Image (tube, rainbow, N blue to C red):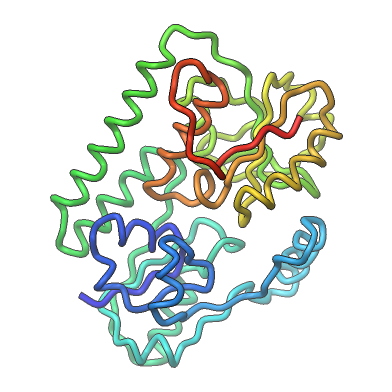
Length: 294
């Protein structure tokens, strides 16, 4: 089966299922494993925002959305040339990836008969469901079930390690300028790590808020996990958060690696967050995943 992934989390799921050799197309943001972007055909492009400030990125996104313009470019001819059997996409967030209706319209125009599977989880449990769905559609359901079982075992180990301990109030900042709350599956990660999410929207979309609203939630720990950034970028933004919420411990987290992409590495995120909340109960995570800023 020839697979195309139009979002980084789907690429990670495909590789975790041992289907990397079947993957023929990816997006410009697919960086895990690093070989995905170099060894596969890139069929989705977008603006390079690495040198833009969070405020400038937010302005750009809002302007594009207001104008009805796309944030991503589908290289339709390249996609057609790959002759995929299955395309993995999403309708969860138009800021994060191409929506499935854009993909289906392009396929109709090109006369391409690939199946399209939309992965749209809003909770950690639903993320596991997407892994099982990809396994079923690609003919490896047993691999998917084994992968999910292993992830659940790791979550159970964290739960055992933090059982009976006080659960600190944790606010997660998903964007800094302007500030956004944590939504979707992110509050589930905090709970699984032994914390109590505050100023959060579990199972719902992240929304813009204010710093006084974050402060009013009385967080004991703040995690900064800006979408689209690894640890270095998160650490720079965490400095802004520390100035806005003085007196509260502020940690930067590798957002793209551990928190915002709904794939297998979310369990790595739970383990890393548990190490922040309960450092004497769980192992320290790998270097380059978390950093205390204040």
